[in-house]
Image (cartoon, rainbow, N blue to C red; front, side):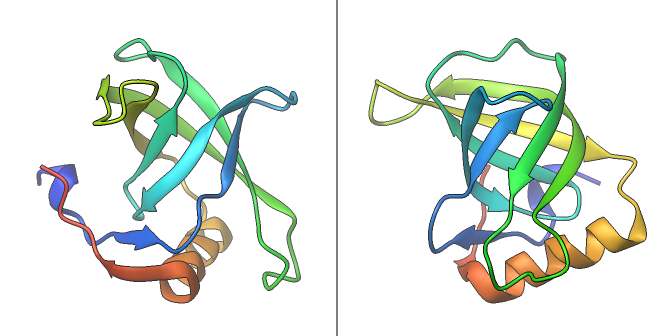
Length: 117
């Protein structure tokens, strides 16, 4: 299955995504699916590089403040605004409770189906 064709949603606002457990912002979440995320980043991210992606969640998700996702950078290229990059991560090893949070984010924050190719 081509992961870029997975059901995903563009988000109403961009959630900050941190690199690992520190305070360095890796980028902002543009869209999300159960298989991957699209980030807008300030810097080029190396292909096939593994990252621990930490998403701080909005207040309406009351039982958790953040989720951690293991992600592999599958592509990265300049955005139409050349100050930024669009970076696609494949996520893996997602547990059932994190998958529920992702589905909730898609339902609550999504505004249209995304078809990134």
